[in-house]
Length: 172
Image 1 (tube, rainbow, N blue to C red):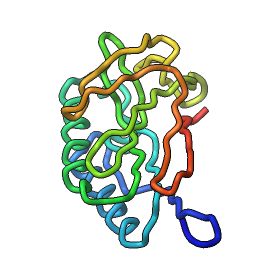
Image 2 (image 1 turned 90 degrees about the vertical axis):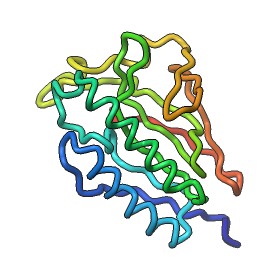
Image 3 (image 1 turned 60 degrees about the vertical axis):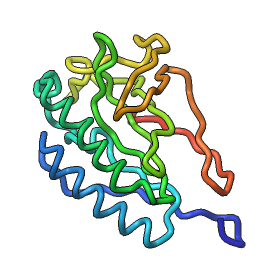
């Protein structure tokens, strides 16, 4: 935090390719590297940024879900020296549920996982076809990117190194 009590927060939309997790995470990483150089404290990437939002029935493919987690692991390894807090979206399998989540990361560690609650199901949006709401989730410990994380529908607050509190809501 600077002398005026402000922090740098960024939101961005990287160039993505549908279902190309390796390409997408490299684009996300380029932006994160620039943000770290510019002393951004928090950067938010779009919902489902690792896979792309429009994968439709591909969200049910194990290869896509595994690819998203591998991409997340790669990002964590590449940013483990970053002070930057990153918020990155991906699909996450929890038991029988597939969730649309935001993963909060810093210094190669997952600070938390926030599942989407309100799924649009009108017009061009068909999220209920692929994803479960956080309301369908009981608090569950999962292993993601090699780390045990408790995931639940309960709201969670995060803190920057300078003590600024923030929360996350996905879409709707």
